[in-house]
Image (cartoon, rainbow, N blue to C red; front, top):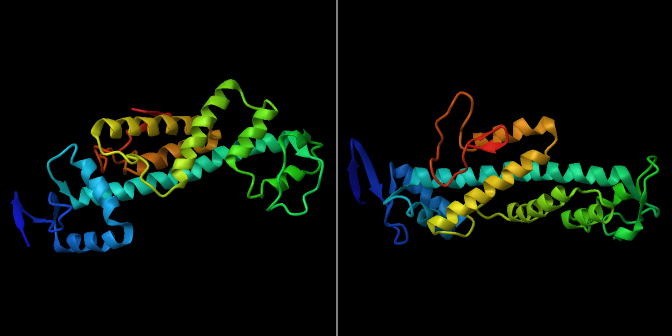
Length: 244
């Protein structure tokens, strides 16, 4: 086991051939690293490790593991709030339109845009269709557009949100994507910030502060703590719906 001194702290070098510049502050950290190679995968760790090496000469396991936890936390926050945006626009559709035919099998049912009729506000067969496996976000947007229920700006923004939602639904890294090159990583982070600002704008007012607070807390930024866990490979602090 190779060790090197960093001030008064002993740093343990990684012996894995794919991580020659990775260091640990304790044997326990090293053991945890090898456990998580089995649990989360060697090449996820290698991807994050290579990304950090675009910015620094060595990578501590603390920073590596912090990023992986941060990215997962960010994805969880985004997933919940993207669902809330979807619910908002689903309500807009169902509050205004319905379908005449009662659905016998809501889970497997299909509905054409041309089937939409103005709601009588008494019952809703269209609400039952929202349980269908065929009622996807794409289908929701298609139905909203067919009845001109979206402004031009909403139409444009929701198309970006649709693409981003599909990315969030997959269990891959949100911030750095598949990139390793520094310029590509930074472009991806700016893209995620733009989409977060867009989500904030379309959330119901009571949810906006919670979304912002939870985004910031992924990097442990709160009103009482202004020191982030990560200085790179992270979004900036959001204030009033804007990243600063």
